[in-house]
Length: 485
Image (cartoon, rainbow, N blue to C red):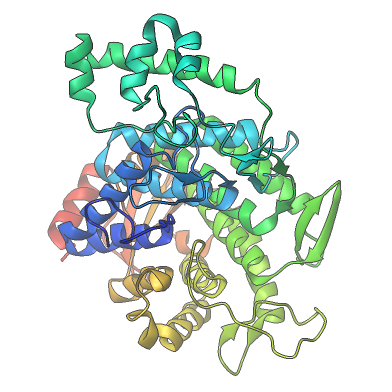
């Protein structure tokens, strides 16, 4: 861990969001300040750096230097999805408005540049335009002065722009220094006034940039990466409460289920030019199932869990290896290969096996299907001797291990006012709870026997045993203050 600049030591630096998600979970369980510092340093440096599009939102694929200043300008759907979810967690934990802004600006970018109008998210934007890497994103000083007029010098200072350029050929990559107090003092501004000028200036620069020749769009729609972005919008809704986010998540999951799923619950991997192609791989199922589980948590609509269970059962039937108790990456209906591989290590995206193991763990708790939890436990046992040695590349497995080491509480909110209480609970970073509920009994096993007419109740349970229900989130917090250890 690079505690000075964030991420891992050295260069290039790739965002590895699942590693940071685990460290936040680890901090939640242990109060290890180094774990929290590692994450927040990374997020702060990235949000201020050139890897983050300071004008249009969204993250580039990686930084070529250790400072997060000079990106490889390609923008990938999977990076931005996971970084949205990570910043949602960080905002829950810290209430730092920087992380909220990153979520909002990144999702605006996704909707503006990577969203198909009738549903589905495109895969990526190229680094190059007009044959030159980064040309779309960089600026020279004269352009800034011409576009912004009186506010130009402030923006030049704020984003470290120089007349000779801070990058190649007199061009500038916009990045921030942690010098806001200096800017306020130099220009005799309040924070609110500075933010107003920054907002207006970014809008003008974005309008100007939109007139340039854009980087090429990879317009294929991949089920796996769409699953990650659907989850990101669901997470943003849970944490920020903006209704348009859940509308977008549902619109896009409906698109995937309509266009890339068959009546036998088999998925296709790719959608392009109006046609679904390629029999799906395990990561397509794993990330879509994960998104469906998170959609349930965001909405308490049982149909998303039922859909997740159908796809999970399909995976067990067609991908599961009863000898190793792991999942193959390819289905048994695909053409036979010399050896069917298994994807075990996490990387820029989590591995399909670690994601499936987590999915089965959660579904096992929602449906009281102990055999799914046992499958998850066996999968973890298969890899746990190795994951301590591979650091960030076992981080998703580590999250599952944390659940088994300190079993999550099942919190159920049932009754007329469930939504208000759910919103209040979701304002806290709580990676160690499994949340369920709703206004009406939908016969979900985890909710069985918990509805009482004319009352809104919160149940705190573990191992199918529940404490006496309470009526307020304050009582829930008091419970964890007393019993967490």
